[in-house]
Image 1 (cartoon, helix red, strand yellow):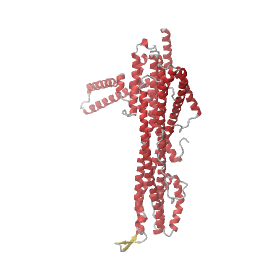
Image 2 (cartoon, each protein chain N blue to C red):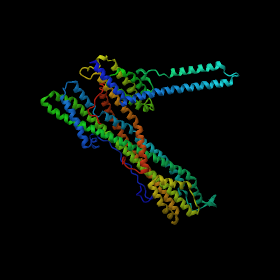
Image 3 (cartoon, each protein chain N blue to C red):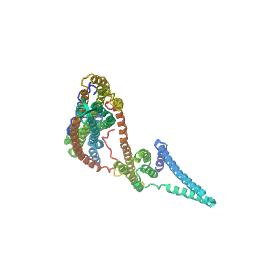
Image 4 (cartoon, chains in turn cyan, purple):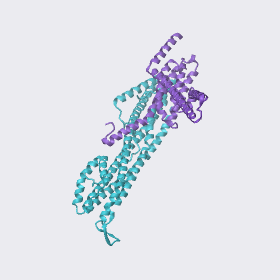
Length: 399
Length: 239
C-alpha cells in the first residue's frame, strides 16, 4: 500500500484461491517433528512392544495393552476436533462482517454520487430562473452541496474505520486460533508418528514370531496390528481436516487484509476528492469553502490509515497545484471522483470473487469435518466401551 | 501387626495435616465457616435494625408511645427473627442425592463439604488426594459459578463432581473393610482402585478447569494481538 506513489493508480485486490480438500495420505508430515521428539516417541514404542511381546497372548494383560492401542491419540483427536468445531463458523461470520463494511461502502457510494460533478450537467453555465432569467450560479449551489453532505460522509467514514477495526480484530482472533491449531497439529503429528512406527515394528515382530510362536504372531496381527492401522487412519483423517481448517483460516485472514486495504483506499480517495473540491471551489468561484468535518477527518483519517496518511499529505500540494493551475479544474475534480468509483468497483469485484472462494472452501471443509466426525464417533464408541475399568493408563501420553 | 499399621496411619495423617495442601484445605474450611458466620450475623443485624425502625415509627405515631409492653414485644420479635434466621441459614448436610440436584455454582463447595465428612472412612493414601481434590474444586468453583447450567460443559462438570466422584467413594465404602486391602483376582486392591480413581478425577477436574479458562485466555490473547496489528503493524504472532 505504501509503495503506491499516487492514489490515481487503480487499486488491485486479489482474492486468495479457495482451499481444496486434502487427502489423508497427504496430511502427515506437514508439521515437522524434531529428531529429539522422534527418538523419545520411538523409545516409548519400543518399550511398549517389548512388554506386549513378553505378555501371554491369552492373558487379560495382553487385552489391556491392546486396548491402549485403540486409544492412541484419542485426546489429541478430540482436541483437534474441538478446534475444528470452533472455527467452522468463522468463515461464515467473516462473510457477515464483510456485509457490514459493504453496507457502509454502498452508503458512501450513494452520497458520493449525489456530489459527482459529472452528473450535474454543465456547471460552468449560468443558472436561470424558469430557464430564462439569470439567477445565482450553478457552481456555487453545487459546492453548497458539500457542506450539507460533509457530516454524513464523515460519519460513514467513521463507521468504515470501526468496520476495519472489526476486520483487524477478526484477524487477531484468527492468529490466536491458528497458533492453537498449530500446536494441536504438532501433537497429532507426534501421535501419527507413534502409530506409524508401531505399525511397522509390529509387522516386523509378527514376522519374526511366525517361526517361534505362531499363536502370538497371529494374535498380534489380528488384534494389535489391526487396531493400530485403524488408528493411523483416524489420525490421518483428523489431521487432514485440521490442516484444511488451518488453511481456511488463512484464507479468511487474507481476505480481511485485502478488504482492509479496500476500505483504506475508499476512505483516502473520498477524503482526497473532498479536498480537491475545496481547492476547485476556491479556483472557480473564489469562494472559500470550509468543510470543518472534512478538515477534522483529514486528521483522523491520517491517524487511522498510517500508510495512506503519508500519501495524503504529499498529495495535498499536488492537488492544490493541479486544481489551481489547470485550465479545466473541474476535470481534476471529476478525476478525483473517478478514483473513488474505481476503488469501490475493485472492492465489489473482489468481494464477489472472495465470496465464491470462501463458499467453496467452507463447503469442502464442512464435508471433510462431517467425514471425520464419523471416524471420531466410532473411535469414541470404542473408548466408551472400556472407560468403566477405572483409571485407564495411557502408554502414549504426551507430556 | 495392627499396631504398626496404626502407627503408620497416624504418622501419614500427621504428615498430611502439616502438608501445604492439608493446611490450605483447613484454612479454606475456616474461612468458609467464618464467611457463613458473617453472613448470618449480617442478616440478624439487618433484621434487628428493621424491627427497631418499625418500633420507632410506631412510637412516634401512637399517642402514648409503644410503652413497656411494646418494648418487650420488640425484644421478643428480635429474638424470634434471630432464631428464625439461624435456623433458616443452617444448610443441610450435603448428601450425594442432594449434590446431584444442587446449583452448579454451589456444587464444588458442597462436594468439598461432603468429601470432608467422608474423610475418616477413607484409607491414609487417599487422604492426601482428598486435599488435592478440594484444592482443585476450590480452583474450579469461580469458573463454574459463571457458567450457564444448560451448557454441555456444566453438565459434564456436574456429572463428574456431583455424581461420579461420590459414586466412587460410596462404592469403596460399601466394600467390607476386611477385604479392602486384598487384591481382587490378581488385579489392584480396592484401596488401590480408590486411589487410582481419585487420581483420574483430579486430573479431569484440572483439565476441565483449563478448558473453561480457554475462552478467557483466548480473548486476552486476541485483544493483545489486535493491539499489535493495529498500532504496531502486522507481524507474525510471537515476533
